[in-house]
Image (cartoon, rainbow, N blue to C red; front, side):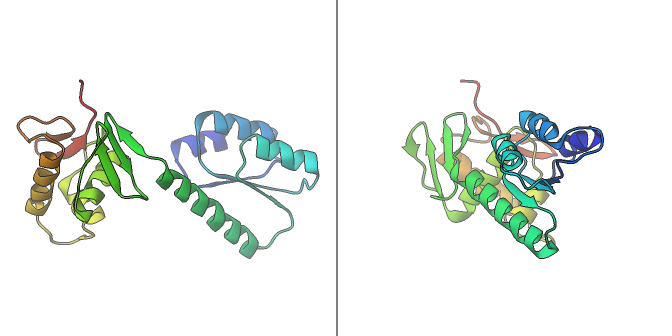
Length: 193
């Protein structure tokens, strides 16, 4: 049970789960994990029978590997599962209120109307949308969106936020989606209608 709590609290990128746990059946733990998390799971076990494999995959495992296996094989399976998870996340549109962002197509629509953004404005909006409701500092935006861990100016962020707001039909004085939290940063929120 401590492993389940750690998987929930620690928010790992991936879980490698052995079905032969000492105090709980691994299949039951997998079902419990799936009830609260979408974290990718690779079952790594000595159980090589079809019913065990089918049961684990039906319970939500993303892959199944039978012992003994090499570190190279496990590493390759981890890369494959993470690649599929990333592709699936990128394909699903991100929606915040009437704002719909399609990352792979690099398109944005607001209320069904296309919004024309520059590449940097798009990247800024995607970053804020992935953290909708959270306050993001301008320093974090410079590091993550502009890739400027040192130097850079908050003014750069301010200018791009201003352009983004204008294209979303709002202003800093009358925000709908992009809200400034004075002295802390900005956050993207769905309007209250």
